[in-house]
Image 1 (cartoon, rainbow, N blue to C red):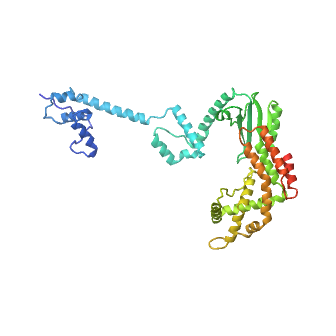
Image 2 (image 1 turned 135 degrees about the vertical axis):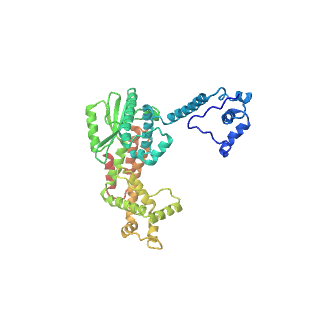
Image 3 (image 1 turned 90 degrees about the vertical axis):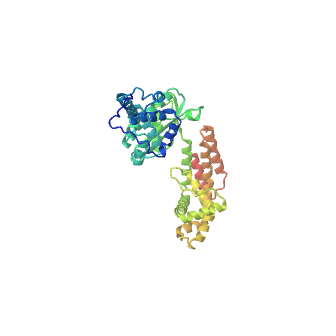
Length: 417
């Protein structure tokens, strides 16, 4: 006598196997193969739903789960499946361990800092949605936590590694510079340099608020504003073993500043900047200059002056010299067709031939200084290279015909300073 089929657990209903769509195609294909787990499941469903059919001995062998099964065994199997599903869900949504959370936060900080993004980017709703979609169990830090706790921990770990490296390095030269932020707080940057090593292993950046100076430091390089001059004096007084060195690139930059301070040429410098500002701020004139540039096959464009980089003054002078004919062309177009009228002040500067002649003279003097800066920007530059460039500037200017009275003497005095 055939035993009655096992009862289904509460809340469990069997699907209607006669009603299906394309998603069940693979299931029915496996049934036709008379093998595999789907075939086994199908036979089991037939057994518990058909109370009149008799199970063959062959079916009983294939259906391992249905042999000697009763309601308790089926319920146990069903609960084991639910337990497996529950464990997968827990694995997917379980909280991130604290050490792993710290590593991910550090990676997030690196991305924000490297991309020069504000810390509040981590609170952007779209960023939060992206992170939640990517890893629902990761809880990103707030902007305050990222900028305070995570940043401080990262910086402390960075310093610890750098101090370990510094303990084994000798004959170090410190490159030092200082700035002020918008609140006028002092900010100092340090760089430790060592000779005859690979580039990526040589320059060990130590962005510290203080630096433990010991016998391994042999020199300190810094620029020359008053505050840094005082610091260099105090450093030499407290650490006589350290040789203070004036930054040569900054010295050549100040040389360009001192040369351009010649009073009769101040008007030329101001008028150059007026020309550049005018033609770069009006879209129609800037487009006209670009068209002229393409026609002439030039690659050089107008450049604005940067106050802290006095050598950029040479680039301004070169741009005005290069575009002199283009400026005159713009004057001819002024007020015609769709072109606006160029104001009288700009037209007077362009029509003044003495302005461009004096600009050429200033450019002649500044070019040797700018070339020297370019030659000395290499990390392989030595003191011999510095003196070679300085002597070269002096010889070039002393042998150059400078038509402006007193300008040559002014320039040579600036070099001797």
